[in-house]
Image (cartoon, rainbow over all chains, first blue to last red):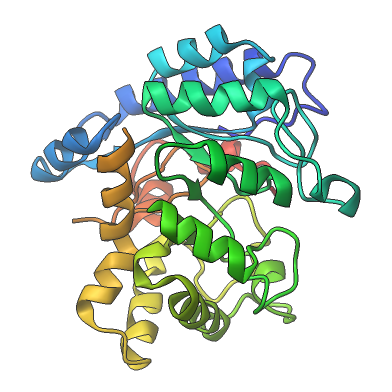
Length: 266
Length: 40
């Protein structure tokens, strides 16, 4: 559920509307998809040949500075929150402009980390300021995620992670999702698979294969990509295989690493 | 096991290796177009 706090008068209400839509769609398609709120649900759904859907929010401003709103979102099934999007909120600051990068989590943001740990929710640091990233790393007792971020060494973009961040994330037991947004991958008009491979190789060298996962951002990024939709995701698997990644390594990137984190945290 | 996408901003956090989002656009009633909301 992505919420733009700049354009929405009440971000929580907007988020609740989206969550309603999520559940309405699940009901309409209950023969093929079910919500998953933990590892066991995913396994159960997979055994029933169903797609699992995990409810996540991309904007911590939706809890409007109140921990009871966080707990109520948890009760509705939300299991991951991206602490900020591209605007400052009650929790912290985004990495969009340099003036925010050295600003860490607010006092309330620190409480959110504690409460998300206690509840069993995934803390997502994509979009968060560099200093906020290090605050989460310091405060979180559980692995955390960067749901859609690449390597800043491979493409100097503030939405990507530095080598040091990749190491810290890996040491926490967390994962980062390779994002197919062209601006996070390289300098071409079209997002290229060879650039995805370039980032994956570098991240593997820095943080190990266990830190790598998928975070396409389909529907949230420029549509000009060599992988047109998630139905073509096998193109990446073939390219990884061509670049000497083993079957187990590809499985880790495609699902095993995320499942490990879900099992650890939710 | 199906691939897992941590940031697929339709309604799905987890996707289908047989089609995933494509499968939804083509075969199910989820209205993907309604859910497209620009760059984020």
